[in-house]
Image (tube, rainbow, N blue to C red; front, side):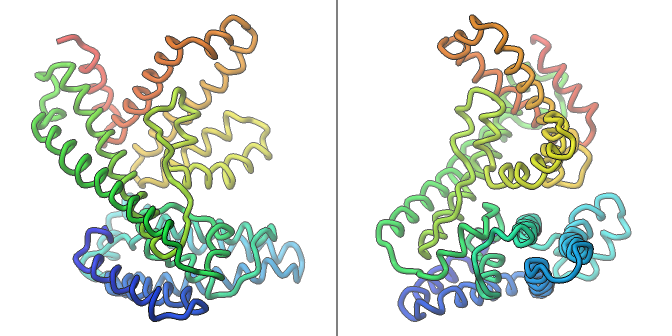
Length: 399
């Protein structure tokens, strides 16, 4: 991970000093782009060169599809090509190696240091697609390649998100000025992120997991409590690790005077699966809502199908293994059932009052929601669904 590399902190301090004290305000976006490319190039010059080629290609295609010149068929073909090329790059490095070992060996021989997956590939691919779609819709503010390059390469959010929107970030490039309150809040956010990542995820959760030992390896001999604790600790470690990285990205961006979008909104305290997904990895779920859910719903008028398509995409975004497809289906089914429950509940005024006013109902909903999410983690904890099912059944067996 970029944040934990030995060069990151010295680079960050030097970049901050130059950004605020040496670089003129009008050139700060170019400085951020150059600094980001230098850092990424240091980690992998091949991947950085490929990113630059893709960025130029996507920018030119975006300008072309926004110009409304030529036939609609030509513009549609250009948009399809603009979307297809980054997706093909993503599939080549992230998905095909999982299904074709010869491709994995070939890519491994072509990349430096065995680096098979370019840093931040999923994040910048989704930013490319967002940019092209919104350029076709004509919703983006006036900008040049300098704005676009800074948006794509910004190192503070490059490796771990959030998946920023161009319309939010680009206007901030025009008038960068030092804001002491924003800078202090950025430092506080970095401290919070370090506490989540280092103290809770890497120390407390990791220590407790180590004390539990190899629970999956001898699940038949372990108590239900140990099995339950193992999967819950794994979920908490994942959450605090990812939320910590998001805090680091948001806080570091604030040091440069940039307010990037939030990625988590206290998901552990949500009372239903719909609220959970409106607060977990917000930038990804909002992206999938805008570019998958709404288009599928518009074509089919089937909300359940749109939900499943959206959540399967969320699952597959995380990894190429089929278990992520099952994980996305699990959450899609949960969201679909929640929608059905909401529609049915409206027929019973007494039940509506209970669900709105009862503290017992709220507590039960919260417990059910969190355990549904945590049990979904079993799907990704094992490579074979049968192993996950066996673990789940052992966990339900009193011992």
